[in-house]
Image (cartoon, rainbow, N blue to C red; front, side, top):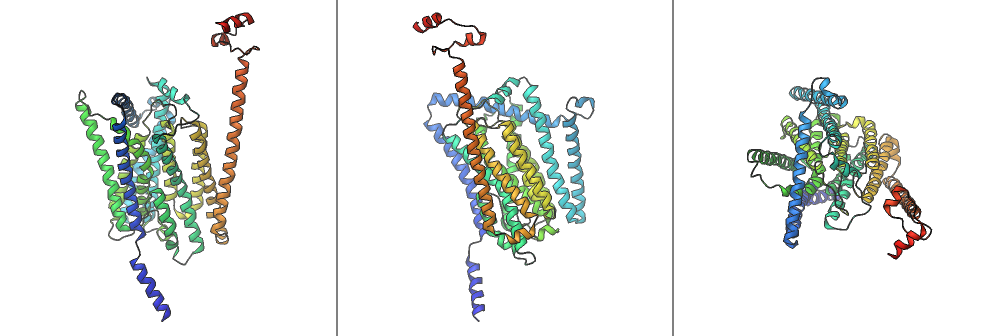
Length: 524
């Protein structure tokens, strides 16, 4: 009787408890609304408090920068369309064009196979063809963008502009509102990338501790809820999945329609075009919502393609739970892949087309660096969502390769114009690499996961991050001391024994100056 009463009370309390999926949905939409309203308010207030003449100059500069952005957008789409068929026409970019055609063939083949598999209800084939389609699209986009940057940097009329961008860098940045927003976006991006291996680790721990019990999915609910709130990634039941899915699809459709109408109108009325200075204000929003929007669609494709497979009965079938009989799997999967293709193409080209000479003290990124980081982030999400749980060891190894390539690229290319940002971004990527390494070692050893506590895993991750922080601080101090010593030695080499600086023209010509001439110049 006491047990029945306890169960009844627990059941009644569970009925009156707040649905965490509803909370997560409200947080998701409220966050998007707050970002949109905050951005609009910021630019309206700045326009009000800025001097009219300064405001006019800013508008002229912004219009010029946006026009450059639109030209880059047009060039990127043109680069996608120009795919030669003949071998001679591919010269000298044989590798780029051949890989592009290979990925295009993989795209078409995956679409055909996907249609047949959906018609015959072959769940495993649906999953494989979905993975092939999304991965081929990502690889095609990266290949064409790399060719675009090669051509743009060295072979265009504006090559000097891009060479200046490649050689410009600043040591520090100013503490302005714009830079604070950029730092917040950078921190959110770090948390979003970190959530991928963390999710896999949480899921693996629950699978190892509750193998065969069937209640591992409830154990991951709290962790998934926290990850969803922090990263703006969805983890929804089917009724909220429908709302959020069609919301994102409608956004993609609206963006496509607005861009198409404006482009057509400006082509039709080139002498009276629509002013597009406001496009620049959408860049922070696009960078902030880039991963949440596209990961939602990747998660939808992951969940839909796993229905009917072994992964669907695991701890989590992706970030979304879409296993509702009322959801038409072929229809939703088709809309998901089309929306992802359009959204990924438009968003990626948009955030990677803003190339302007940076202002000293402002946090700004090279478009080539943004393109690589965004594409690799999407490749990481594809790896964690669409690679089957039965190939968990391959998934973890691929994640290591992807994150390591991001670390090497950030060190070698220095995508941000501010040296300090590049330095700490590398530290963040190294921390993600450390977590991914821990996940790789633990997720492939179920016995180890059963014997180690959650506190031990968290302690290992934090200890590794602390060691990395100490190493980065030491390296930074060494670099500062080396740069200071180098600067001091150069200064001493350019000053004679009397402490008088030699003029630059005489330094370059290597001519010597007598003491009397130096004294007379000093007197003058």
